[in-house]
Length: 434
Image 1: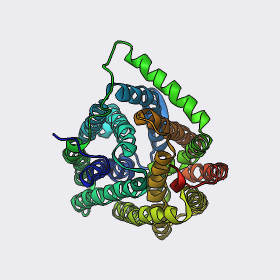
Image 2 (image 1 turned 180 degrees about the vertical axis):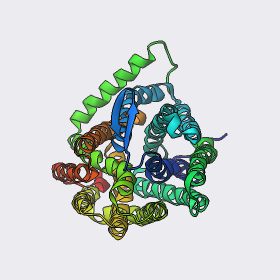
Image 3 (image 1 turned 45 degrees about the vertical axis):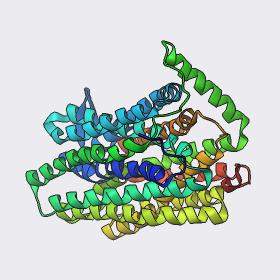
């Protein structure tokens, strides 16, 4: 088919539509249904799991598995993104990780307490598939949109993802609410399979229109992996020469530790630490909280985009980090459902904003280059290594102290540090970057 022009409406819409397809994974698997299901399998009255010969607190185990998955993604993504730019086939890599993640979601239908190893493996590869595909998805942004389009397009992608994922979650909620025991658990497992099917089906629209990759890429040779490392070395030297980009990436690395950790553990926190009166209230309350986060996040992403136009990207990110730090302190004292709902609303307001603006700020700070996937691999590696550290610290504090409250209040340190590092980024705003 004819290659669509950069900035064309059909092309940018196709890119944003992948958010519609894949955002069901972080909502259904990472944030809502799976944490609920996992909590019912391993309740707080008996939270310990024997895994690989060691006894873990259930929430600490899932934190450690998550950290290991992100460590794997952080290791392979720079190599693969360098190969993708070299070979000009980043879409194939994006498709591979998409299908790996989606099929793993379908496999989670068979996750039971008696099948813990298979379930953990599917959970592990689901994470790798989702985050691996984002390496290549994010790298398309400067390829398919001009700089003046990128803030709004990044926000549009997140907004479409929130809306699409909420639709599926509402369907899942209809399937689950009112059911008890094994019937409720079966409905949750069906939600995992539906997530994978949704992801595969709707991704096809993006795959149809997105370009294959760079037009003038060389042919793959036997030393292509070494070539990927050479590309990374070249990008690293350029990062050091670009003070604004370098300092921004350091700040992003620090605050991203906390952002992603909070998003990954929020529902586990609500399931374990909030005083729900019944299991039914817990199921309904947690899913409603996640819906609140998703819907408010659409507004938050849009407002953040407008704030960045008026005040600049870095000042806006500084304010958002300050709000995140306050939320972490407040969360330590949250005990009742109403407190959790209020906290969810504030989390939603800043969650969408910080993700969309962080991605577009990095994109706009990039030097002129064709090797966008290699540059975005640095962005993704910073995010993934941050998650590894954040989840490992969180899981360790949870395992040692037996309380997720102590772990989540500690994350405030990363937001404060990120805020201070953002103050060191050169003053000119992202909108002034040529």
